[in-house]
Amino acid sequence: MDMSNSNSSTSTAHKNKKLKRESDADDGIPVPVITQFDCVNLTTHSDTFGVDPVPISWAHPDPMVRGPVICTVRHSAQRNAIGAHSGSYCIYTGLAVAAGKLNPDYVPDLKLTKPVFTIGPHKSWSDPKKMASIDPFGHVVTDVFSKYLNKGFDIRPTIAVTKAHIDLPECREAIAAGRLKPDGKILLPSGQSICSKAAIEQVWYLPEIARRFGCTESNLRQSIFRMTNGMYPELITRPDIKIFLPPIGGLTIYIWGDVDTIPDEDIELTCRVHDECNGSDVFGSDICTCRPYLTHAIEECIKTAQRGGCGLVIYFRKEGRSLGEVTKYLVYNTRKRQEGGDSAENYFNCTEQVAGVQDTRFQALMPDPLHFLGVTKIHNFISMSDMKYNAIVNTGIKIVNRIEIPQELVPDDAQVEITAKVYHGYNAGDAYKGIDESDLKKTKGREYGYDEGAEFKNVVED
Image (cartoon, rainbow, N blue to C red; front, side, top):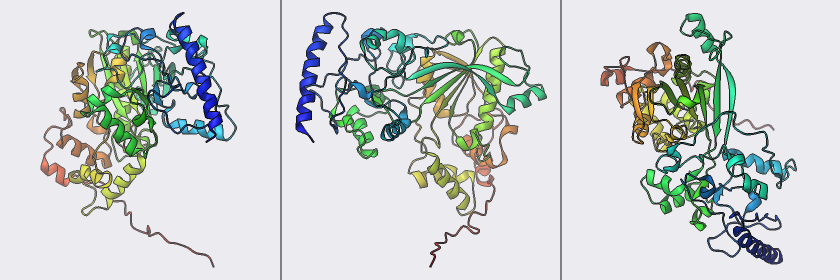
């Protein structure tokens, strides 16, 4: 490493730190220190000369006291968060810079990006036990942190709020069957429904994340560092930084009806929390109940909105129970090839055999989007999951009705899944009462004949 460059950077940082102190006397906002890309720092350390993160007081209700989350490459010395924006897509940003398509000094123009409807503030925003994986001010940075932006700080939104028309064939089928009736406001005669939506990048407050998972913050940091092969050394070297933007998928909230009614416990609220399943949700794979349950929830959300209430679908990017799609497909192969074929009896065992664990969603962070919206009562919870139900009610949200997926919507090959889940604790409702061990043993999935002609042939040309 060129030490002359390093000394130059240190000198610049010292000069800017002096300017920061002078600025603090004026408006409390430091002068932004712009990173010079003339050397590469493998990591940073707490209390190193020149390192001066912008203070952040997580869960403070006043955004100017709380402080902005700064996690852009433009202010390395003043960053108060570990990681990078855009979740797993941050790697593509690096590729764009490497390919010469993106200037690393580029600062986005956010003038026209404000939310198209208002969310909050809510009392839950200042309770870390309810808000630890989302920056509740992430959608209003251009308003509440305008003084920082005007001063030259590069602060990025972690939430974007907009509106959309949703066009699902299942909604058109529901209209034809008479289950849904267009009203021209929530549901159009074309079958399109009109909704609001918010895309959210996860922003973790590490002390509370550790508390929810029953471990120390130090153990949490070391475990993430170890299992990402040392990808984030600042998890170890910067215990002073408590915010982490993880390289994982975020979530999207879809809202039918008036958003302002959500905190009102007297107005009906229907909700589904759905974890991504690309094979079923997008392509219609029938080995699971994911798409039919999702589209049933959307139908119920539309009906609720038409009755004057509000419907929510919270869509998490947790493919394959957060184990990933490759692992999920390996589990599918194991299920189909095991002795006796695909069976409800061994449904969870196959996942554990491949992945070492049945599920890594855990749901400890899942209720945060509900608290972001100010939810305190759910009248209709479109889910059979005991883990999701327990996680939500344990944070103080009341659930009145639990709605199971109608039996006629469960595909034939998904009978294995639904039988195994109900037997092992999912809410059976009226539709699935009485599932016992005999059902577990006799419920089988279809045979695929996986190994017919499946032998790998290594062809070498002379």
